[in-house]
View 1 (cartoon, one colour):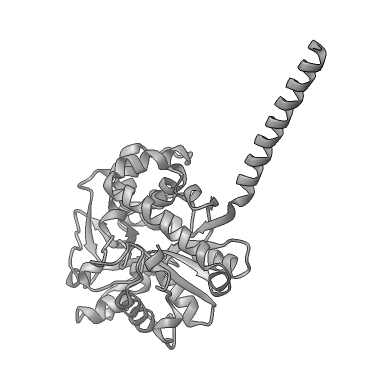
View 2 (view 1 turned 135 degrees about the vertical axis):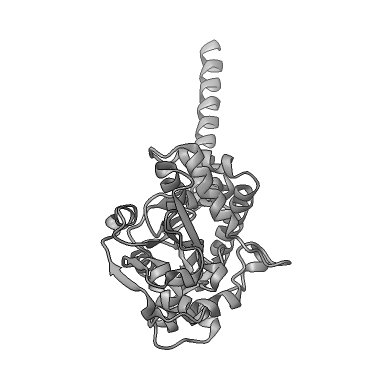
Length: 333
């Protein structure tokens, strides 16, 4: 009798454990796997996505999200078109350029209507307004937003672009060339480069020309998906936006806490203070439209970006605005 009772107890326990295991497996299988590809290596400006990951906001939406470093915006865009990744987190200007040339992708989330870009100069030879560029030597590297669109800056401020010279530099040589006096100004992001350089050389070592303030406005941090993925998975894209929006709102509310989350996932020598400043610069560039979710893609920002691309000769024609953006998912995000 004792043996029979013991057998029944063990059988019941085994059944319960199998039921629990089956339930956990089903729960995991219920989640949709999503990879979001960055435009570049780890940076503090990616904090909102790591906050969403760390706080379980993606999980709340039944998403199993992987965040992946990238090598360029172009590579990230190619990856989502080919279906290797489901979304890309890149400056929207590069998506607008690719769409203009026929790539089938959409901007579904725009978090920086104007990329937080500045022209950085030495404090002993400050360039803080556009007219200060006269006679200067501008250091340019491929992909530098500020110098790629320097013609836009000239046009917006009635400056002859022939009044200064441009020196092409390898990306890794830009800072040394500026500090060493080989060039007078370089293009950098306040949400990445500036906090690092000020920590290394001193907060008063540099002067800045704020590009958006002087009319150079091209889209920054954005979420991009392929047309095909959006058509097939609108609910998943909405879920992504909803989770990222929560992460971004938390990042704005407490940038230092967001930087701490970032550092949990990032093996870097950068200090908490530096990463916090990167996050604060990202937040400062958020221009939320009243009555709209934080991810809403402002058509005016898209038009500004297309104007800049045309002026700089980066594209030869523009498409209808609906070819670039999709705001249909905003009410659900």
